[in-house]
Every structure is written in C-alpha cells, then in structure tokens.
Amino acid sequence: MESQQTVKLQTIVSTKKKVRHMERKFSGRIAGCIQKIVLLTASAVTAFPFLWMVLSALKTKEEVMDVNVFFPADPQWQNLTEVIFHSPIVRYIGNSLYVSVVTVAIQLVTGAMLTYALVFMRFRGRKALFAIIMGTYMLPTAATYIPSYIILADLNLLNTYTGLIISSAVSIFGIFLLRQAFMQVPAGLIEAAKMDGAGHWKTLWKIIMPMTKSSFITFGLMSFITCYNNYMWPSLITDDTNLSLVSQGLRQFFIEGGAYGTNWSLVMAGSAVIVLPLLILFAFTQKWFINGIGGDTGMKG
Image 1 (cartoon, rainbow, N blue to C red):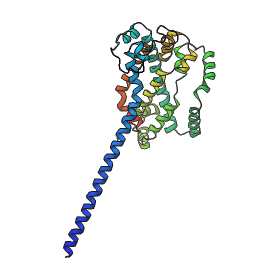
Image 2: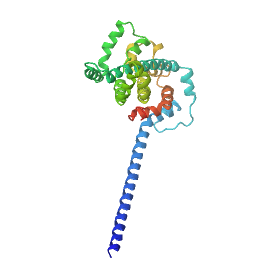
Image 3: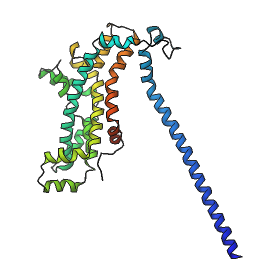
Image 4: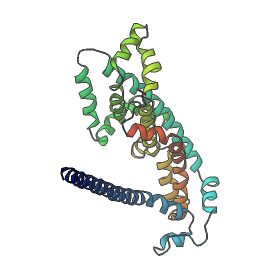
C-alpha cells in the first residue's frame, strides 16, 4: 500500500516538474518573440531614413516631392554618376577622410597615454585630475567655440587643416572609454612586466593595447564618424571651399543656391555617396565595435 502511494506521489511530483518546465519554456519563447519584435521594429525605424535616402537618390525630382511615391518607377542611376563625376563631392570626401584619419590617430595616441597615466601611474592629484577632465566633458560644446577660435586665430591656424586637427587632438569620451578598459587589465600583469624590465611605453603599446583592442577600435570608429560628420566647428574656422568637409560641401554646393539648388534627388544622391565610406568602415570593424560597446575589452582569460 505504501509503495503504491509512493509511486503515485513520485508520479505527481514528476508531472508537476514537467508542467513547470513546459511553462518556463513557453514563457521563454514568448519573451524571445517579444524581444525579436521589439528589435525588428527598432531596426526598421532606425533604417528607414537611410532607405528613404537611397530610394530618393534614384528618383526623379518630381517623384521625390510626391509623397505617394515610395519606390522609383525607373531608377535614375545617372543621379549617382552626376554627383560623382560632375560635382566636388569626391574632393569633399577626400578632405573629410584626411582630417578624420589624422585626428583619430592623434586622439588614439593622446587618449592611450593619458589613460595609462590615470590608471597605472601613482601620483598626487590623480583622482582630482580625472574629475577635472570629466568635468570638462559636461561643458556644452558651444561654450568652447569662442576661446578655441581666439587661440587658433592667434596661432594663425584659421582656414587650415592643422587648425581643424589640433583643435580635436584630445577626446574626453575616448579617455573615459579607454579607462574603463584599462581598469580590467590585471594589475599583476603590469607588475610582472615591470619586473621583466618593461618601461611605461613598452607596457602600454606591447601589453595593454593588444589586450584592449576592441575598446580602441570602438573609440576610433566612433571618433571617426564624429569627425567625418562634423559641421558646426569646421564651418566656423574655415571658409575656403577647397577645405570644406562633406557636411559643409553638401550645404554649400548642393543646397545653398549651388549647382543643384532644390533638386532633392541629386542632394540625396550626394548624401548616399557621402555615407558610403562609413558603411565600408563599419563593415570591416563591426565585430570589434560590438565587442567594445558590449563591454568586452578584447582580453582573453
């Protein structure tokens, strides 16, 4: 009798476990479906302006202004050839690429050295220095325009690439991002490197940088995008059209009474061509970029 009750009790317990397992599995599937729907919706909303820009680049001027037309009836590929071969768009892209690459290279060097000092070197006022640096990040960007302009004017660096580059030689965001990565490097590894005779420079470039590669790539990519798309500051310190970056050139040549005026199909074609270098760059660096954003410094345990 007792054995039968035991068997029944075990059967009931086993059934309840199976029910709970199925409930958890079902709930997990529902949560997964909801998550995918939310992500797909957010992706569609984010991608829609880019899709609209590309489609508008292939429309006629009349189709762009017609809100009832989403897809071009006959793709106007000549819009792309027009802006590439008969406008200064290639020169603007070249200017932006040059300024962005040099600026990012300098920011990576200055950010790495300053972050190394803040994390691994012990000196009086280290925490206060970091607090001051982060405090400057809270200042509105517009508040720095006038003093920066005066300094560049005194140095005779207005209307020059040098002025554009050195005025962005240090990135506070980059220092913060790299500091978070450097703090995950084991202190014992740094001590071992010192015992082996490695100096600060060798420790930084031979040990820390390879271990935090994802954070450096993330910082470099985000900084490159910012420099490449920068509009306000370059517009304030440069008025030579030969030095215009892509955002300035798009306004000056394509929109503000330029060659294309309000021909928005050509304006969109120019915008699509301008975005192309950023898409290519992200395609090659997306793996490390996602790792860096997700908090993975690239270190291997």
